[in-house]
Image (cartoon, rainbow over the protein chains, first blue to last red):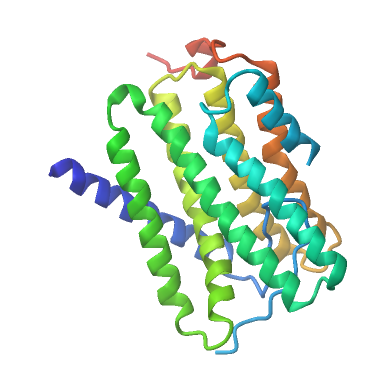
Length: 50
Length: 218
């Protein structure tokens, strides 16, 4: 049981760290999107309307 | 594309295809995704919604596959500790958590919900993969992992994710620079090239000496 709780805590910690890192890195970004799967050119994505 | 074909071919020739199945699956899907994107690009323009849908949906699929590939490497690193079951549990929780978080963020947007979800999920999974790969780096050092192929594949994943995160910073520094549009394709080549080199140069029995891997003063 404690191991499962540990796994849950680890998953939450990783998720929180990743989202924190993303918000730090993209804090001053406009609408720049860089994807890196494959070598095809990246299309422009319109910003959200809200 | 050549590096991807080379990696899969070398894996098959060296009987490592099933051992690194999810890495091979990622590379194969990446090749197919590029073919689909190029086919769509032949008939539609770069700014067309058709290409945008084709690009972001295939990208989301590739990112989920890459996430599974990172988990498969983690399972191999932690195999001797008999915690593979918990590694899988963490992976499932992370995938569900990331999808839930992404939906919660995207649900506030009113248009193109599915495409926006695919894009955001892809980006969020990239950053989850980055953190996961750094943890895996730490585990490789701590456990003094000596399997050369495994170490090099984890290292190349770490470099790839780091370069991806760093490219955001570069875009923010110079948004109008021409190099920005080449970053994606350059980064996209990195993983197949590094994995192909690893498979070609080292056998499954190759080992690193622990002293070369990390020097811990005692």
